[in-house]
Length: 245
Image 1 (cartoon, rainbow, N blue to C red):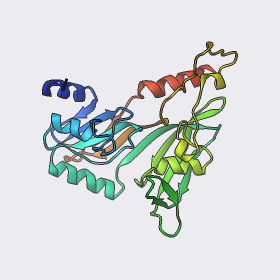
Image 2: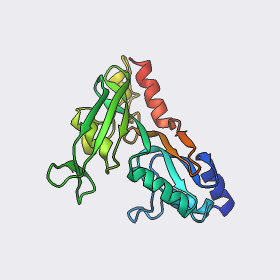
Image 3: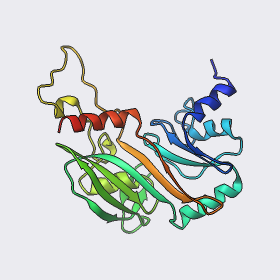
Image 4: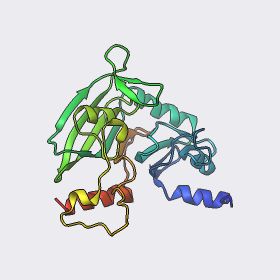
């Protein structure tokens, strides 16, 4: 049965981490597309949910379907233009957290490699036709076989963080398109025995990337910093990695 308009608004309201007369910032759950996808027409997008809540809503940027975290939505045309200009002039600070393979000691290391989108939906590094893309990386925690990394993209290219981490030989856990692999409890926990006739499931069922923070200026020039708490799956993954280090 189709949810009522009131129920749809309530469901969307649970995602909101900040709201004023001009903007709504939500903590996007994983596996929800930012915009409607023809390949999955039955899956409601964040934009569709936002427009059930506010008819004139426009998303100001995008997150990959599997990426969770902070997403900015404008309630009116003036607010949309105001934030779009900040994105265009690289005045928006974006901070992501990624769980990656390997033990790394990044101290705001910069990757500045041009990215070209492919017809397959993936991207590649291309010095001739690619567009400028720069990301800074800092290790936040190191575990036995993995690291938690802060990612600060200065540009906003498709799959930028994912391919730049792959170049650093630190692919994101679960990101099989760019060299990542699944992580199983049996790989990190000594003496773990899987129950007989049971197939072990990965500790996370998507790539482990979360848009943790967004900083920009509101229409009245007040600075805003919006933070999105980890979703349950990344939180659970990190708890297991810490517990078994």
